[in-house]
Image (cartoon, rainbow, N blue to C red):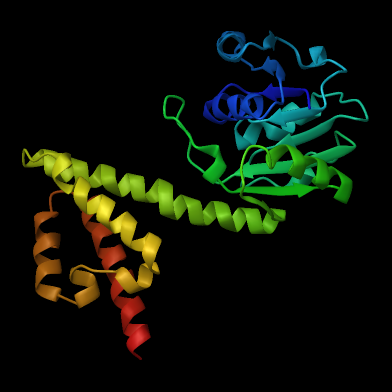
Length: 259
């Protein structure tokens, strides 16, 4: 397929290269900031365009990788030909936002976190697909199946639940790492000291269910230690409250399991 990528953020950078490696040329790149489209097109050898009306007839697949709130606005500015499939890559946006603006629509959602300068092994990333018709789904499976060996179907509600789970497992977890780093820095301690702990925790949940490998004072219902921690956090009420809420949630979970 000949592909046009709309957007030039982290997903666009990685996905465009994955398409090319799979033998699907990315012919055109569009972004609201023309310079960003030019940077990506220079990186991959495509052509940048400044207006969506410049999308060529030869394009088979139009991939919208902009922020969730901008997807419908971009889609509404398109005038796709009947043969062109228009998809977005969002986990939390329904396929329905595309249906008024194109005859063939779908979603290709890669369940992964992307940073421009961090290499990604696409073969291990699960992609969740949805399409307006079975034949469109078949076309998307054929293309995405050449990028990854993990291709699944998921409707918009299922994809939203995947996205919520990913926010808890990835985005919230990373924020907790940031809080841990702040606490360590306050006492002139290096974040490097807890990196082996982070790796071991991640490895455990790859081998067992998270509930089975939970440890710590809340899991043990160690009230004395938890109170000491809360006292240490008394100068930062936000962190203290977060510690209290998460601890209470853990205590409740294992109390319910014992009942």
